[in-house]
Image (cartoon, rainbow, N blue to C red):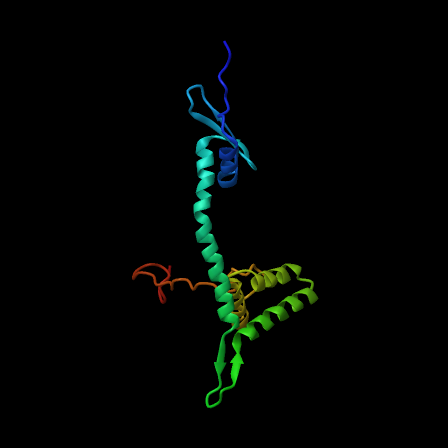
Length: 178
């Protein structure tokens, strides 16, 4: 008895549409027509549930684009930030000073042989929301709380412990002996 065709027959326009919209190049079906596997152009054969989860990543695309766009709009706003000196119309570019500071940090890191720090400063200069990380690091350095740890560390900052106040009658209370 011949086996049933395991591939769904499709016409050329449907195949092109499946490939263009959903990146599907083939579909396997079970005996009664239920789809058993989908062949993705990059990831190969997968179960329909796995393919569905992969397609849910497409729903995140508009959100990720908006987040990245917001990061670059923040970059534009920071670099374009100016203040005017009172009594004059002379603008002082504050954002350009941040950019110059970051470029200076890159140069100093390269000079000191700290290629990892130079890379971090370069990424902060280029990537969206990098200015927030740079301002955080510069604030740490200005307050003297930065060390050799990664940028997101808190440096030498230690949270103070709770003061020791023993209960009355406990050993260790000032003026009492053990």
